[in-house]
Image (cartoon, rainbow, N blue to C red):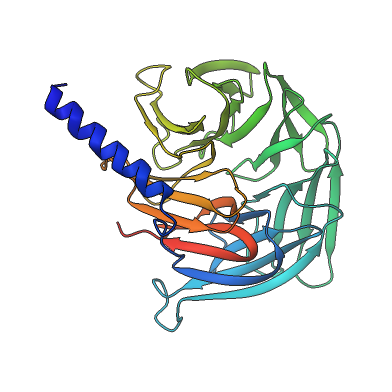
Length: 345
């Protein structure tokens, strides 16, 4: 790199850092939905449920499940229309949540199925027909805090969870633990291959991401951040050779066919980053959040073709991060509201 080019990059980065410090740097949400309590976790269903997008959010002792419609997909909607389908009682604060691909609203009986984790180190599988049938199955085995969980995406008959207890555990829907992978540090994220039910990605806090074959129960590939702590990782489901993560205050991207070390790495947040999520409609679009602060948390939307974030949002003490399955729109939770940001593509 020439001296001139280096100076230009440095000036660009310094001005970007300055913008992160500015109180008015983050634009407000495109849409908001009021909630009754603080929202700790929020997840769009990544699966086709046969109707408007399914969304669930969790608070201190409840999970709200509903549908979302946006004006970008329905001309009769002004902004956003959120319709509550059911409020589920939850014994403890909801710390993470995952949707089952079996959730359907276009067939009778309707089916809502998702799983949660809480501070009691238990996984809960919740199933409802939105009428009279409602079932909660509790899965026990983890010995420390559960950080992330996911359903097998093709049939939804298995759940994987990762924990501070240095394990990734795979469960069937009866609550039986079918596989356990011993990790070398706390597990922070787990992702299933979108088409291959026997491939699982597990990210560890010390900076390593491993891919496991559930048939042989062996690691088949590993990636290295080169730094720690790794706080969140995601597998790009529209192009599965791409993996992304946040580690320290940086985001990192791998092409898993090329190297075990990241192909791209850039500073993202002034302080530590918290979440990384790929868009579900564009393989070059992803978002990161800073760890919730005393006043606000920043949401950054990045595009691999742009040197700086394409959108900077600011939300009061944001929690959770999820992308809509068919729109370039993401959501985070916060103090008595959901905040949605639409990204211009």
